[in-house]
Image (tube, rainbow, N blue to C red; front, side, top):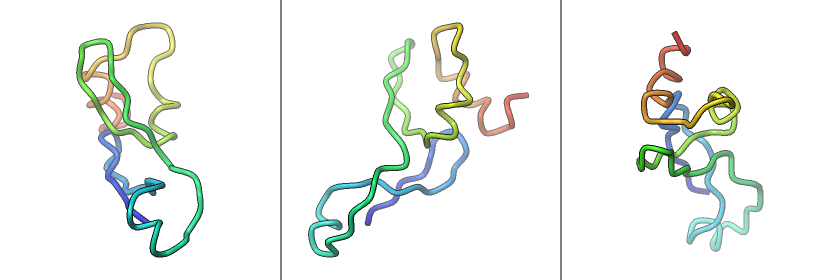
Length: 72
């Protein structure tokens, strides 16, 4: 099982697939996604952080950085 840190909150979450799962035969879903944002940047975010992104505007790197400080 591979893990990757969320760019929003910093929490390490499971990333399914890859060579690690081949040898362990572990199954399960991935707990995050890499998103390409409107400003052209890419960020790996856990599902909790994805849910906290604004829905009424294009998401940018600034929105991701605000996730780490509680959106303040």
